[in-house]
Length: 550
Image 1: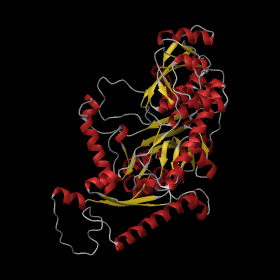
Image 2 (image 1 turned 135 degrees about the horizontal axis):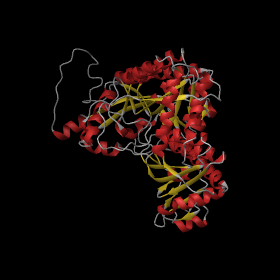
Image 3 (image 1 turned 90 degrees about the vertical axis):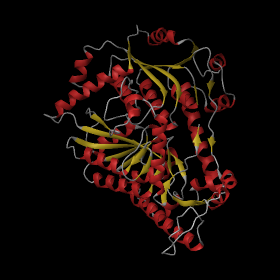
Image 4 (image 1 turned 180 degrees about the vertical axis):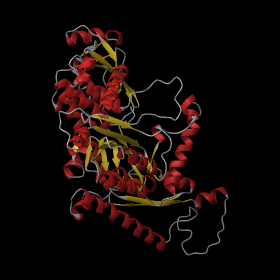
């Protein structure tokens, strides 16, 4: 605590913070050049991290009430919240969870609470993990489309979506390894939170789903009640009269404190600054496009933002939060190079979200340190390329084409035909070059021999826990772990309070961001733009999009 904490603490009356968790918890703050009319600010993942850190630092705040329902986030984001709640609980803060509805991800977070309550009419869908992999070869055959796709790396299975009707042996081995490791972690974390043996947790998951009374009998929850009774139960649990503050209001107070610290920092060196930049989406050349699930991570936009942040002399370290399955090999390399350059001046730490794979992993190689959650999906060090031969479809539709050519390979990437033997040979040569360059970067950055780097590459996807064991990342943890490492790298002592500044870019003028209309049209346009950008490049560093872990 500092004098600013003490000043605000003198007027602090709240002793519990209410934190709502539902829907999408974004890494990035939705920003527009024009303010959104009538829109309520939704908490980002960084907002939640900041609220939990504020609870940790405040002696007057005794705990939190979490209200959880129907989350649309991955395991790494969920586990970040779970881990921070566990840390608060270990430090004596009381955590009460109202689990309105949900499955594996919601229960993973809830398991960190001192007590879990559900409404009478709900179902706890604790069912264990599955991976859904979709294949399109048969339907493409029916319409006369042939996928000429190649993956460089034994496990680079992105092309299999279009070239096979089922998983290859390496693909199946990789998927089993991923979900096996994630399932073990899920069981372990629930075991730790609920005080049930891992073996019993496994059996309980096999017996799911659960109605509330059965869940209570199995010690998965502590009681059944309505939301209106939660405050009374929290008061009983904490042994005090509850004075609840909404998470958004608590966050505003924390932000005011940081603004005051920033003012003080202009005339003293008391409060060093660390920056967090969050970016997500497919990696493309040029500017970022879209928002939400169709957003792209544009190389030009991110590089400009990195330049802007690193030019601020008050910034002593940068955390880049990455949520991306990869994309453009060229764009990924350009971002990696920029991070390398900045790393020569100030520490840069990568913090991986749910997915930071292929190109998302490549950009991370330019940083001082890489941090990932143990449940992050990463790796996929390999390349994919190819095209769709539409000649069969053209024939079915009665479409004919003629060409006037001035060079032998002018039609190499044309969708009107497949690759010739010479063209395929050239394509594999190009892919081999990119693959060797990628593995070489891994070897240099991670201080491995090339042979060892190639062994852990081959397009294989790993969990964060596996990646740590293989030397592909430095630490497992969340944003707070990355902040602590950045402070250490910058020579800032652990006891000093840092002002952590959050940066993101305006998304530009869109009517949908003002009136929330025409969203489907805008999203479709963004999807087309993103894929057109990727189509212009013939070699991609991207992991399979169709692995759906639940």
